[in-house]
Length: 310
Image (cartoon, rainbow, N blue to C red; front, side, top):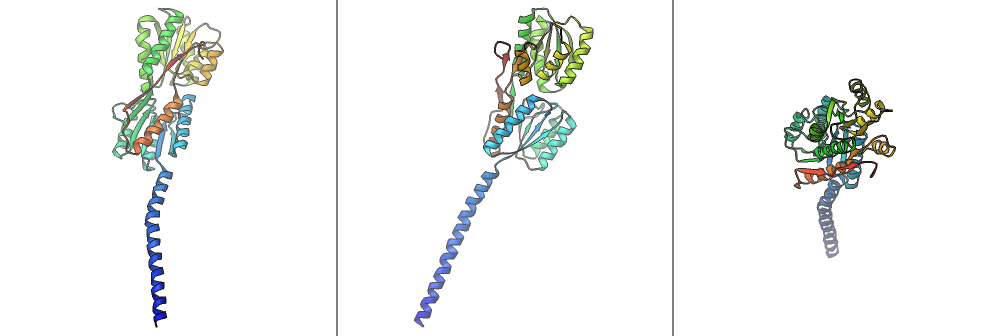
């Protein structure tokens, strides 16, 4: 009888210890596993880019992707194709996918505002990159100093061609903050030092830059210099100006533009750092998702690039 009792007590002790051990591992292990899974899953960020038909924004997205991979952030990229309606639909779709932060590069800084208001109403943080969102307070704006960059380009044209020179301006997408700011910077200098004989949008597009430049040349065959709000339009203008002695300055410092400067075809561009803007946006997004505070505005340095430093 005593032997049976001893056996029963031993068996009960084994089960009790197993239960305690199992319960402890389940509770402690579950918390650890859950925390590890959450860390592995990281932050989910949506990136709505205005267009991927432009090397500048391709580089921006590449910078964002590289940083997302480094930080373990899930990055969902959607391309608006320079279509404001598509960008609105893309953003609404990102909301439904449960993103924690939206990085937006607006096609139109005004038109995107209602969609961004929906994002904020859904409790999602917002980072604007390269172009601002007008009329809405986002959590952070990351952009180059477009006004200063355009002033540098305009002053370069004045120094190169001389005061009073006839100049054509190729504008970016109407309504985009980069268009507004670069136009303002250009005219801060040009209105008193250059003769701006033509100013027309070519939508940041190389093919349109070619066509618009051809049209403006018909009315202004004696033009002496051109300022394009981006390199794609500047490169299009160069095709239209082939054989003419016209000084062309762009903005963005894309690889094609730098090569054109080295080849002596293009005179200058303004260097931005799209890869840095993209990576910084993802870093900021991760901080916002984690409840950290960030600066409301983060300017990215610009500089003039010519044949001397290309």
